[in-house]
Length: 114
Image (cartoon, rainbow, N blue to C red):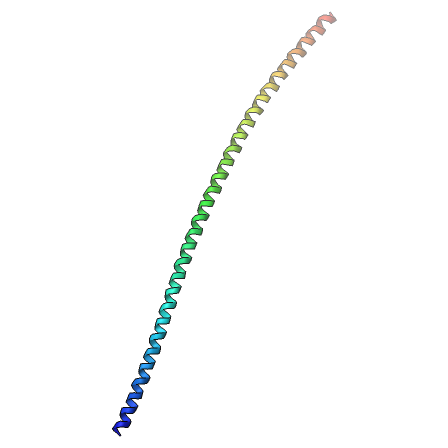
């Protein structure tokens, strides 16, 4: 009877050791999987950071480009405005000359009519 009990106990111990080994193997596999997932997450974080930096740099470059274009357009507008002002002044001067010529012509016509 004692041998049977020892045999059952021995089998029970062997079975428990097998279960412990299986659990250890499963634990190692889960730890490896978790390590791979942590590494993948870290790599993704690096890629996302780089993407964000690239996007910010591109945005800043685009903003600088647009600001430069805006400054050039404003300068062109200022030049055009000055040219229009100069033309307006020239037209005003020509109108005044025309009015003076018309007045002289009227005066001459009056002299001739006398």
